[in-house]
Length: 450
Ligand code: HEM
View 1 (cartoon, helix red, strand yellow):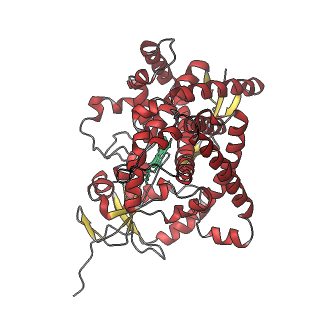
View 2 (cartoon, rainbow, N blue to C red; view 1 turned 180 degrees about the vertical axis):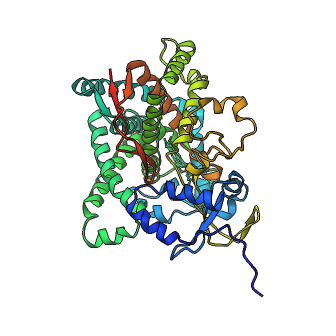
View 3 (cartoon, rainbow, N blue to C red; view 1 turned 135 degrees about the vertical axis):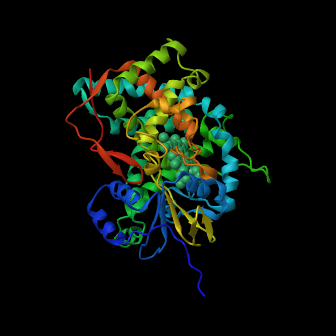
């Protein structure tokens, strides 16, 4: 007798929905509609993957990402094409290799270590704003997304490689990386295209760019080996040691891991800032509260790390922005063995999909979910809420290793920008969701500077 498998409710017509999606930029409304129709956990089939389970249930997500995480492996297949251009860093490692790498790198990403990067960030942000002033002078209306993309790239480069790159080298590195990123984004969305692009010679240019980039970084790392230890992220990673052998990373590993940080952390941070400034533009009263808190805690001093940690209201604003617009809006895992959770059977091989955007907009976790309200994150506001209701940085062993870096970077940029500029949203510029690899504002966010 065959055992009955109790799957979550199944959408009958997912194929047709997928067909429609191909013509639509934004699948989120379809996914939300299915959540209303079938409940917080539902299932759909694709030709090659019969069981795909989408969920916004925090209990079930906690089971997948934390409680029974050993049974759910991150599916890196779609991302494997990244390895072709930037090498295999933490993002692509699985199983024991991932655990060993993560343990090795963790000390470099603790708040105390990240706090040491503040001066690198500070200098780079000030320098960038001087250039932005000139653009604003020419045209006071700016699409802010490209600015944040350039700014966060430079801040990351400075924080990772310290003063090893001059401004000219940073610009050349940025050009090469942005070129590679264009190709990588296409391939992460449709990995099968790699073979086609290779056959038609379209990857040749990008392979050459990757080669030049690797040669440049190899040289930089080799030169660094001959210098006294530095306090940038590369320096921290160089000082990390494997527990069993007490050896550090090889030059190739250092190159791959530092490049991987850009892949994982550049677009996410830049998009977060675009969304944050969109929401601040809609809620100018929040800007006044951030500035008042800054005045009270930091005054006219240059912000030091310990003071930034005390900015409780700013923390709440960032948390609420990441709730409403989570850059990492979806993730997935593959079930290694049959499992069972909350009455549902999860067969071996099933793809489970925590739908983070849906979770962050679930009325069950977030009453009046569409309302922007930083006070949801006061101590009282957090009480009685599920621990897994807010997951902008994921959870479990693959939780974002760069979250303290990202938070410090965002805080520094927000504070400096609010102190320096007055701005408003350009009213007739429509902003919509564009959920690609990360959640972007379609058409960008347009600000008018005074
Ligand atoms: C606001 C900005 C950011 C957001 C929202 C974000 C979000 C995330 C999320 C959700 C994951 C886990 C994905 C999953 O479970 O499938 C992740 C992983 C990761 N993030 Fe971030 N991230 C941000 C910034 C950064 C930065 C600045 C860095 C680097 C300095 C970084 C480096 C990484 C790495 C290396 C991983 C892979 C970790 C692993 O697999 O062990 N992220 N990020």
